[in-house]
Length: 67
Figure: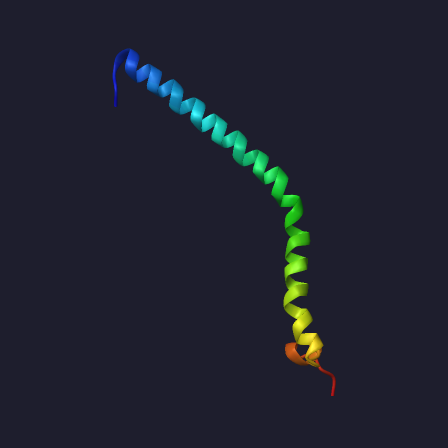
């Protein structure tokens, strides 16, 4: 911890850095959160497609098969 003018200057720099980091994180959240559901759906479809093309049925895999 610095005292006097050096401490005040360091405190101002750290507060400004924290403020800018908070602004950056908020901007990233606004950018990526709306994309998240579509990305998750796309990833799930990519995982399910090879299983379905191999002749498996989703209901049989999840235990929801009738019969």
